Length: 101
Image 1: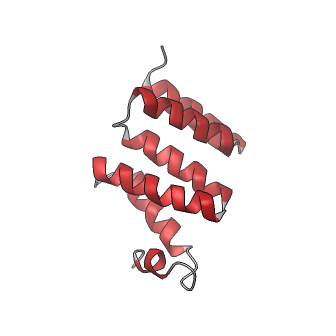
Image 2: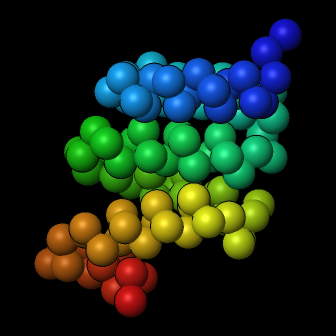
């Protein structure tokens, strides 16, 4: 059985190697075992952000928000979500861009 820390370690290795799809899969698997892990929500959201597509952006936002609902002071989630919102196109996603300020 893999622990949350092992999933997080695998996610970190995959992120460093640029394996974002594999990182998302690993984070999702980890969340099936530990759905309350804010760290795994953070890794999943960051993996979705790296795809830089609208479908993944919408999922990334949902994942950031789900993680922040569990841990509102999680620095990784807060920083990642702020950066994600700052990068949003204010014309296409005015609400998302406004949340960065």
